[in-house]
Length: 511
DNA sequence: TAGAATGAAAC
DNA sequence: GTTTCATTCTA
Image (cartoon, rainbow, N blue to C red; front, side, top):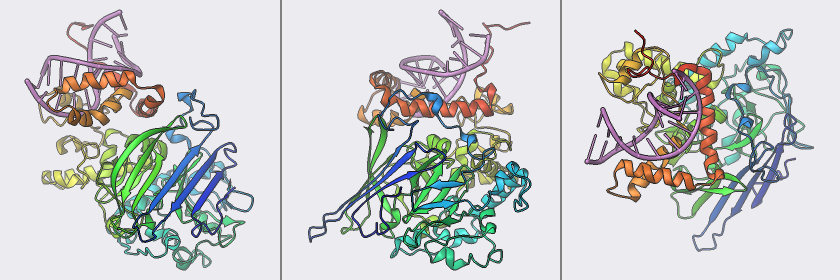
């Protein structure tokens, strides 16, 4: 039930509870607290809160801390062999219904002549779509539409989204009822035709015109986006979560991240972020969100504090987020022509197969294509392969002579020759082990601890990190454990030999 | 290039 | 039970 009224934009506070009939026990509360006190004091504080309460999540109901790790959603489980939920029950009077099956679920109903895409076509279609949508030449990427005076209408514009969140291009002559104006200007159109659904856009029914529930679409195929109350909402793995928390409400300059801290809320780690909109009248914006929440950052693209968790959970590859990052609302001019190569670089670590008919595979393929094209184009393009995302967690250290092999996975450090890393890199399908929980923790905090203890040797920092790790509570470790497990499972699936040990001379060498 | 931490998986 | 290797970076 969407308890938030349709006049939420006028109301200072708004609470949503979103349920799905696929997971009837899954309830997400979207709490929007707006406290604008601008009585001449230049003081205003806006708090956005997005909490998910899921049966499998630690924060659900009784805050059960005995969540099994096996409850983790699997990356590939959502899209390939399950028909997307036909009905997302949003409430008694708010729902949207799938008019027809999206293209990639056709194998569940071959008799439907409207299913225009085959399974492999689904993959190709995604790849093609991704290439088209994210290329600098794409009209979508070149769209300069940006209207900050009307948040609802801005957000309800497909062209205002970054490519990851945009619906697939719709042939306008397929359906006269779905005109450009429907997308650009009107918040919602009911009873859309099937042709729209073939494009991944779902019709909305039983909605009042005031509900501001816009189109839904599903790209990447693991992630379902829709517009709810002027926000981009993402449906992934049986969960709704809010994407790009209302950044469009805050000026054309974006929001600069000025502080972040993790805290435990009802047994679940959450991030508390503070943004500076850059304008005095807006004050600071404090946001509480999940650790894997993605933000679109200027010159970096999609970013989150836990990129690997974000991609596993939501299928969105991310750079690592840092203080000072400028988060942009979807459709911001600075977000439109960004080179996504940095995002693709994130996936150099993995080689996905066509069986992974997910956004991850698509992006992995795109990364491979990019590498291949760059290597064919000459060796001077090493730098071109790097995006503006200079973060080492984002840009792969793999040098171009290694990445010229499309099957090569990032292995070892960026040593150029003579090391074991190079040797291992020459063998195809060789990959690095995924980091365990402690490694993820250490990687995240090593820099911080190094600054905290200037002059300390890195080995001493390791000791401190280990000490800190041992003292951490299970709840604090949970996110790292989950992330490590997710990474390991994915790696195990893609590269089962990843943990193979080298044969040592003193070991079981046989002559 | 060793080493310092932890943990998962292979031996 | 032991060994390897994920990350990071200084000595």
